[in-house]
Image (cartoon, rainbow, N blue to C red; front, side):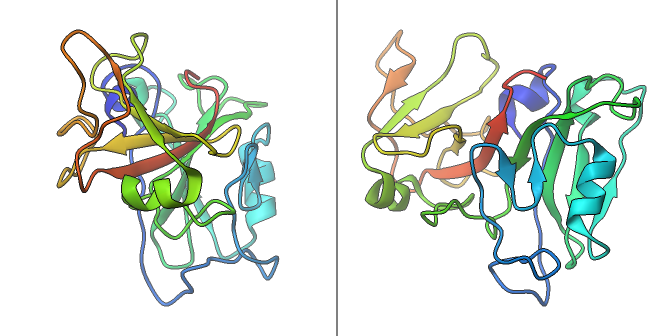
Amino acid sequence: MSIHWRTVVTGFSGILLAACVSTSPTSSGTGSWVLSSNSMGPVSLGMTVADAKSALGSGYRITSPSDAPILVIDSAHRVQGPNGQNWLELIMTEPLSPNATGNHIATLRTTYSGLPTAAGVAPGMTIEDAVAIYGRATLEIPSEEGFGGEWVSFANGPAGLRFEAAGPGSNAPSQTRAGEYPPGLFRSKNYKPGSRIHAVVIGRSFP
């Protein structure tokens, strides 16, 4: 579950997984899933939920949130893989009415370690290991998000993908900061050993 988005009104909750499938999940024989700037596996930004169901095939299930959430944090559709675990969150263009006709996917988010980028960086990986692939890390707490949101970017990171950060030993990003920030500053190139990538996000920051 995402700190900033789960605490405020952006609609992000959680996602995970497990079972008798390969660590490189496949979609109906279409090849290994990869995270890109506009898609996660066969699910792309701009699709309707019906489109996503069709693209995923019969081995996947999409859960439907309520159209009358108390908070937007419960407004995401969730894709469950063949192993019964949650692989993706689908945040719609109208998160307060997630089941509205014509609603499209505005944001895709995953915390599943089995869904890597093309270079092999996935949720759960330590920032140190990601740095070995993408280059130097920069940690940041965006002022517009507040409420505990924290992100990590990389010198040679892929365009269009955003990485949520979490401190060492934490189950949620809001529990422990990954970055070591000087007083009054919210951007740093220093991070605590063992800090990790909590989630990968593409699409709009605020549905």
